[in-house]
Image (cartoon, rainbow over all chains, first blue to last red; front, side, top):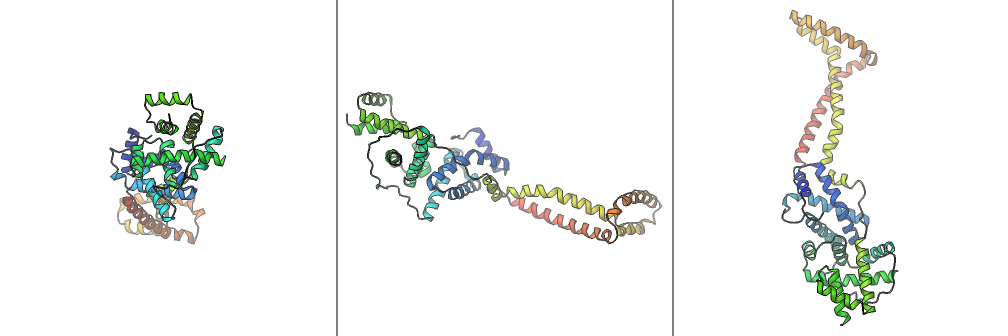
Length: 179
Length: 173
């Protein structure tokens, strides 16, 4: 549910009227997506849970300021992204927009079964820099457009494209190496 | 055509930005170039695998933690506690009414009014019947303690009711 459907708008209205059931429903709709996204960036279950917790608390407390012309999920992912960045800064983990260390080669050799490949992809994803992980998950898992990703991460579309192209190639290479 | 250009086309395709002409051009090249075909295959498979990444969830008590932090759980706690307090209050009032002190005070104050005396007589019949039922369970000194317990419970109930209502008023999302 990417756009502001009538159901989501109604849930937001009810949550603003202090309706516990509406808050539960918002949590159930989005916690899996937000948690998966955060988990794939920080790669630690408990840290991901804490970040997701803070994300939803911030979401509900600032719900009154949510601009209805924006997509609710994009707004929520923006909060999750900011919380994740804060966490990475606090724990002094690297988060650079222009990380050029990963030179890539274009040779791909193996073919593998879909299930094994997903497992390998997940492991390979963990080896990418945090920003690349975010880009890959937002674009390929959440299927956000470049414009939406730009809104969430607050970085230019050109940077997103360059990073994503490189991340894809890097990912394929890592899958091959780890296989 | 250079492989680098084809790689850019493949990336555009994965970016969901390639138009019909670009797709045709790519198909044509891939049908002739083994190296690019292999690269394309790997990239598409990687993309498909990324789309298949499973959704992971926090622990099942996650919602409860959030709702508690938002103040909702206080209300739920109150909902659970309210019937207990109401029951305790009702029991304490009954204990207060059935106690010998209350009966003595009532009979002293109302004996001057004949109609009240007749009414009290009827009430006394009911009370004595009830007493016969209740007294085997509350004999001796315990019966004297009931009014005090009743008063304490009543005061506590009003105190917690006030506190809970105060918290409820503050619990704005």
